[in-house]
Length: 179
Image 1 (tube, helix red, strand yellow):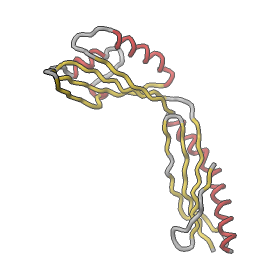
Image 2 (tube, one colour):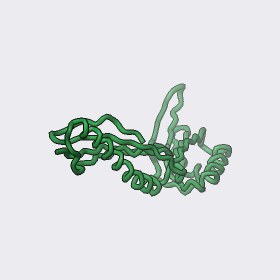
Image 3 (spheres, one colour):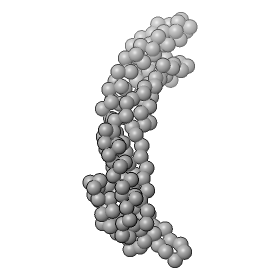
Image 4 (cartoon, helix red, strand yellow):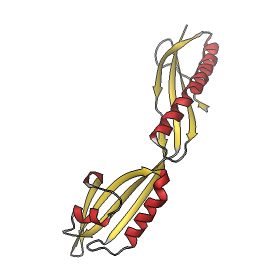
């Protein structure tokens, strides 16, 4: 856990930033799959080339068109999320689709990220808050002692927490009244 330098944002308050990092277990796999073909390549053809993944038009995230050398390429990008436990099976299906020769398909490219499940992040976030509030109160007490005042109650808490993949950061800015 890290505490920052306390400061006063408004009269009669002490504001203390506190942060902690939490490492979460993988819970979800998010995939981005792009299928490229020669114009007039359609979305239905792209989806057909990804048969077995359970994708539909709702998974479409982007359509790209590129021209040059007398050709027009159309790329349909789809995104979907699976449970982390299905990662190996999904990668195997994607590898099979990439290796298969399919009519009208020039290229299937795949990107994947692994992240924590939203429920795991919510739980870790909630579990970290009491310790961070205690740490903030300790830091505020030190600042208040130096100012020769007493720390009062919490008047506001700002939460700028976030998660990237399986690494989460619980970041609070806690303001205390002082007397």
